[in-house]
Image (cartoon, rainbow, N blue to C red; front, side, top):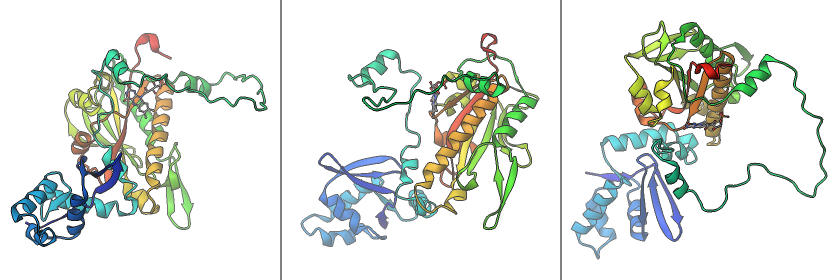
Length: 353
Ligand SMILES: Cc1cc2nc3c(=O)[nH]c(=O)nc-3n(C[C@H](O)[C@H](O)[C@H](O)COP(=O)(O)O)c2cc1C
């Protein structure tokens, strides 16, 4: 079989060791000069025996073994294999945002929190130094005291101040009409802006870099009155739910959110993804990846505020099983990938607004 160097490789020094990471498989290897030479050699499809000429001092068997090792660690890909196809596909689709965009793949499926970590374990892994100050103070500089912040009684301010992350919910169902308001006010198209270059750009209640709106949202209906439990796609123009799968979703919700119990006790989850091409088409620099994730943050805060206004209990989470979610959604994780998850439930009576 012929091999070539994986395109999804980042190389760097950690301390004094040269390291190679395949950011798609998330396999890291500490290597030496020989590895570097071999990887340079395989910049196009080549057979392992062609490599022997480069290392006359080594037996053909040991050269073949080295190639096998590098293939096992995914730094080389075999011609025609699914890994080689995936590697080439990512390099092509993400060509404009690489290498910066490798961050997206390198951090996928990483364990961010584990609900089973107890306080003692957390304490043991935290640095022994005090935690950094939460606020920055300029000392010995002139300062201006601001007038006391007197707030008028307003619905907006009550919502703003009342929003809190909730992790306990009543077992009541979320009325479909309320879900409809949540979706429309967070992801619905509220208007269009006519532009000479891009035609009518959609507008929503959240800002979006260049009005590209790369975000899509999928509903996990757990306990919604009048809606069969399942997975749905929300269409922001037609304001409708498109069915992806029907069936109880509690255990999947739990797994999607890396084993967090409140996710399965919620009434609905919102799986937020991005269709990168919408942004890549216009923005050719890797920095635009930031914009895509910033967009998701805006949408999530809007959801939390709208949910609070509707008397619901919202939460958001970055602890996700990305690949599992993407498989269930039927998206490839390359052109479209999950970024963020939020959820709502009905509040426990004592926490009602
Ligand atoms: C990007 C982001 C990721 C978060 N991920 C989690 C999470 O994985 N699990 C969780 O229980 N809370 C998560 N939270 C919620 C925060 O813990 C919460 O916002 C914080 O404690 C402040 O509380 P507040 O939202 O009530 O102001 C996340 C919040 C943000 C903004």
